[in-house]
Length: 328
Image 1 (spheres, rainbow, N blue to C red):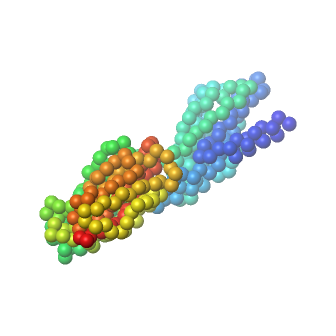
Image 2 (image 1 turned 120 degrees about the vertical axis):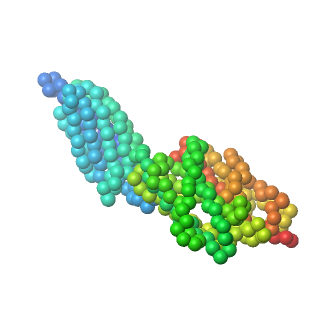
Image 3 (image 1 turned 135 degrees about the vertical axis):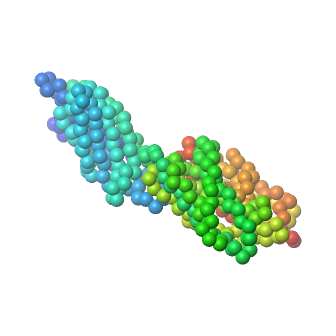
């Protein structure tokens, strides 16, 4: 009857958890053994995905532990629960690694628990993406028949405000690469600007995620420009994914010179989102969900970008609106 109740309790705990591993430690009741058992129940976690193109669906778990008197165990499982018997009483340090179908480690977590004879202890381990570094590669294309002396400036800004300046290497006429092979994992704001004769003629902003051991890629194509002599701003089609879905209200396709446009961003009910607004890649406002354009904008085509980060920096997203300022 006691064993049946324990199995029912384990099932209830497994159904109640999400993205957590419930480690239920059963200490043996046989006095002469002075050992305990470790029963691990879990459900497949569903981490958020932005970039790169890597599956974050866990298909197997490796569970390891180190305990008293140099005792240890290491087990791999695809099923729940996993029970490990006859553990020494005392403190155990438990580590869980999650792997996808390709064998890539996509999440890990560590915590400690005290195993005592005759008592039951519980330990929760939150699985998070592994820390480390990943690589970044973005291809930038432009019409070299229009832009004769291009200069590309780009940078990544972390959720904590750290700035990483990126360098661009020209591959051939009208094509440059921006790359870095050792970027710390996490979410970033990428600002990309194309300059001619010291003037910003095109720009874009995108949310980027770097994952340990993986490459995040993107592509920007600039075919139209706000040249110093007059022109239009770029319409680009970046293919980086967004973890937050941000929508805009109040945006219109065209305004008359001397008038303004007020645009409001919304992240679909996600709380504590901090927004930063950019016009042609140049920062305009931050910390507010609304932005009003300047009435002195010259006639031409403009790109308005807004990027949002959650307060803890764990999620990010961006959205773009292209509009025209007409003379009348």
